[in-house]
Image 1 (cartoon, rainbow, N blue to C red):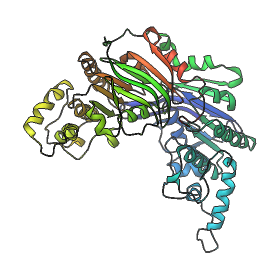
Image 2 (spheres, rainbow, N blue to C red):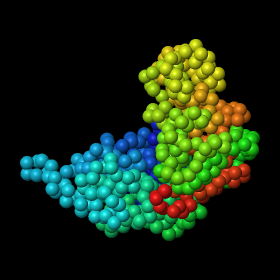
Image 3 (cartoon, helix red, strand yellow):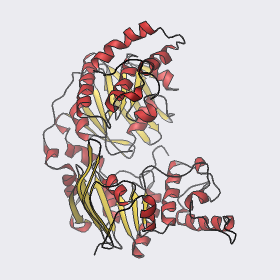
Image 4 (cartoon, rainbow, N blue to C red):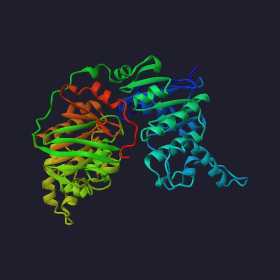
Length: 504
């Protein structure tokens, strides 16, 4: 009997179906890989199991008994521990405090036993001592650690609760080869103790190295479950792609000029390692691959948000030193984030202010000439089919799709020559997506060059003229013409990547 079983799990967020009858079974003492493309539902299924998301329908069984967790605390009490992609560490606390947060050893007077806490943290860190790098000790402040070191601390935090079922959602994403090997040793130790592990990864080689079984999800459904010894890399990719993946690629949508608008050579920054490419005038180049492979970091570096360690950037033949967003704006570069809540709209401010703020920042204007600015943004309001009651209304009164149109309209008002789009259609409806696609086509016809990262593979293949597939911080493949298929995209995205930290 499986230790954990999920059957017929459904989940919908508004109009977005996240799970449609997902199935999953986990045996005691088993490492079970869960894989699939971006947005296939694997992380949502794990959140349902962990109690952080409530299913709309379906059954969860733990040791054969039906469970209905009211929250993560109940799931943790039942022995389920989760490593999430978004780390839960408290930056201002120490490594020891983070690992045992809420489970601190106590003295007879019920005060935190700091000596015991430090000793316990030292014992936990011993598992990763040889690969954690300098500066990782019980008293180190988490804010002072690197991304890979934080990831190791988060893993130890999950294991410190001694869960029976461990869910590792992309736990190796930021780790180098030696660190991954150390994590795998921990996983094998858990398996030997009879504990079960759900292992989500984007690295196919890791699936065959550590997992006993593998389940594939596609389009929010479970499509395959098999022993890793009885399947192959090609079979798993085929399951992830489905029949639609063999469809012929769409013809080229745009007719770019021979002029190079953006040239990047040997760019190394954050997760990126030695990235080179050109973007022609009037062309859309897509940034594909699995989540977190450096696509967003590339866009942020070009916009001057992340410092460039090595490499060069040229705009229309002129060397660009992206010292900050304002410098990038002066070179006619614009950036749109799909996370409009954090990096897009000012929700309580009027629509007018949201639309003109980028123009004011680029031109360094301190006086608002309202009539002139309203006339300047009017064409973009019409082109984007932006719907609102009044320019005086707060952006928060708009739908999510119209809020995203405001963010895009804001940057179009600066009349950029290069437009950087970071998952711009995330969480918006089909009609709004269609409006945005039409806008991108019109911009290309006007000579604007677009660099587009999208977590929607179909969208990327449909609207990009070329797709650069990122894997491990590098461009693993360039898909053009008839090569632009889901099969080719997935094969490049899931190919064995060198698991070394980019730029080191």
